[in-house]
Amino acid sequence: MDILTTLAEVFTILFDAHSLFILALGVTFGVIVGVLPGMGPLLGVVLAIPFTFYLDPLPSISLLIGIFIGGNYGGAISSTLLGIPGTPQAAVTLLDGYPMALKGKSSEAISISLFSSFTGTFISAIMLIIISPMLASFALNFGPAETAALALLGLTGIASLSEGSTTKGILAGLLGLILATIGNDPLISTERFTFGYVELQGGVSEVALMMGIFAVSELIIQLESPKRASQSLGKVGIQISGLTTMLRHKLCLIRSSIIGVLVGVIPGVGGVTAGFMSYKVAKDFSKEPEKFGKGSDEGIVASEASNSALGGGAMIPMLALGIPGDPTTAAMMGGMLIQGLNPGPRLFVTDSAIVNSIFGAFLMGALILLPVGFFLGPIFVKLLKVRYATLLATVLILCSVGTYLVQSYTLDLWQLWIFGVLGYLMRKADIPLSPLAIGFVLGPVFEVNLRRTSMLAGDGYSEYLMGQPITLTILTLTVVAIVYPMVRTLSKMKKAKTETETKTKTETVTQS
Image (cartoon, rainbow, N blue to C red):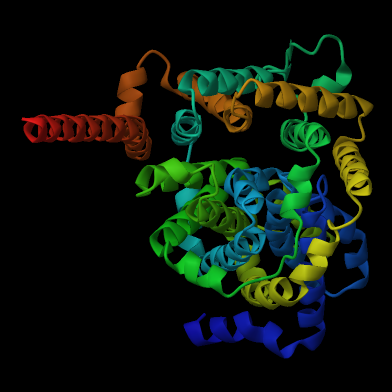
């Protein structure tokens, strides 16, 4: 098939008013479910699937894609204004968005999030359309050794994200790794730390943990200091200056978008991982790393661009290999199967027109996100601008309902509260929450793939690794990620010492 035919099929949706309307509706609904804590794009897609029974293939997939795109951005709004992540991956945006809102810069933070999310989604859509076969082939080359190395690279972010005390951050990360071991052993299915609860055989609920340590703990903190929330819920609107701010960090924007796509291509790694990895890399290469976690616009650019770019990346293995890149694309895959479309290599041969139309829908969804966020942004914010007591009660109900709907386990509600209290106590002890989250998310990925690598390598572990160039490359990057911050810190200490000595000598000469 020539490139002109492919492009014509990609932009078929431009001439399908019905599909465009459904796509815009999906983006709008996606932002709404993203804004409301405890919901998110996964639940939005699941709720929308029954309606796809009554739609043709292109409009039905457009609806799901729109919810996916809108939901990835919507979580940034509640993260910024309330300090409560609307989605688990928005927890990374919270690290700088909420502190910026507390400084009276809510509109600026929301604007940066919108433009960064749009750019990340747009870049991932372009990469999806142009180089999806190459990226799909790249993901296919990732075996257990490569995935374990990538997870280890992500775990290096624990030290980088430990504000104040690195020791406390490492302890939080270890707690996350321990929590990740609860449930059936992923390889031999024996129970680990389930204490007789059948509901724990599948492990600790990620949604309950994320909503608990970030959302419920924040609610408890705000009950102690109600003014914190009201300060950030003033007049909020989208500002063009957010675009200018984002463009000041264009290298960070492009780098984070690429990280998001590449992480999305690898099935099972997830949006939280992409956000944390991009945030860590941005902090490592930033000229002002000390501002991260205190309202850094660069931190918001990194997290939102990466979280949104992950969408296009996660679509690649789902479409090309029939392997969903994350839970949301798994739900979208179910929606495609309902329409008689079987994702996988043969789909590109038997239904190339619909595949290219899906590419077009993703690209148009990115473009639609901008006007939807720009013109309807204040309306989305009004969902949060209700009476303070009502707001807290509503958020708690949504967190509870959203947590329960994922698995319909009552035990998940207990987990929500347990992790909420845990998060509150950690905040009081100045122990960072992010290392716990990243340890919990990457722990299972690292464990499973490390054990599989050991099985494949047998006794010749070093010989096996020498034959894995991708693994060696990632491990080299891991060493760089560990050493670079240390070298930079030592350099700053040496520079500060030199300045102090120079200042002392100058004062001595002056006194003489």
